[in-house]
Length: 343
Image 1 (tube, one colour):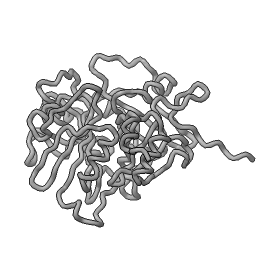
Image 2 (tube, helix red, strand yellow; image 1 turned 90 degrees about the vertical axis):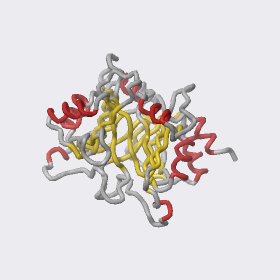
Image 3 (spheres, helix red, strand yellow; image 1 turned 180 degrees about the horizontal axis):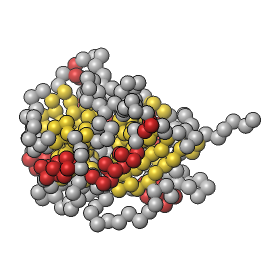
Image 4 (cartoon, one colour; image 1 turned 30 degrees about the vertical axis):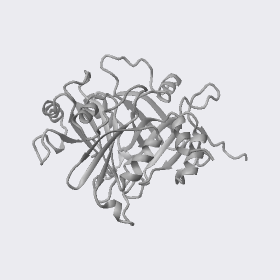
């Protein structure tokens, strides 16, 4: 029997998306494009299933995106890109329901915490956001942790505003810098994500919690050996692409019945999943099978064939997506739709 961890590492996993459900795309796109400087690189429409997907990323300042979202060229770019996106999922009709609201997380036992953007000056960035009508969970000088902020997006998701390193060679006003998930047991979660090719970059240990920062690094890039050092913190703050921040509240690992909400339960739907591009979905899922992983959807299940949702040790959904898609009829979608039954 082959080593499933070795098989997974051979599949060139690349963290490609964080999915959040949104109520009104006009409001959400205005926030993330106009205020946070993101670029809409692709849009997928599924009118028969009554939802659309919007993919946004931070491009280096000055880089012009010349493709048109929704086209085959944009799809090819999306499913082969090196960076990470926010995938905003819009289910038709929510924008017309005055009482409708997604669950933004950060209530008791919620797993999803926030996404974050790095900036040169947190105070100046927050002044600009406030001038545009944004409201805040925490302003930079509030609370015990000074110098960082949490602004609300149009759906009430927390968006952390973090100071990047003064040595960072990043010209953007904002760059997408992290997704935060709470974990029960780091001894299970960290090896799992390392088996997907992620690298532990930094760890921070507070009185009753610990933070672990992981990323998919380009070949040849090596973080500092001492993960708790100032150099490790500096390394993370210089990155252009985002990190996965895993937050462990001490003691949860010793509670057999403790479990975070994944974001896909009734009453807790908001954040949906993170997604990875891989060379071969079937080979990857065979390795997950050998590891004893559970699934929300297998590649052969559901209407959208060829992609999978595997569960991590905390039950978060990880979408497993074929890099470059499946070349069928000149298209490069990483799935194919189930054919309707013959009459």
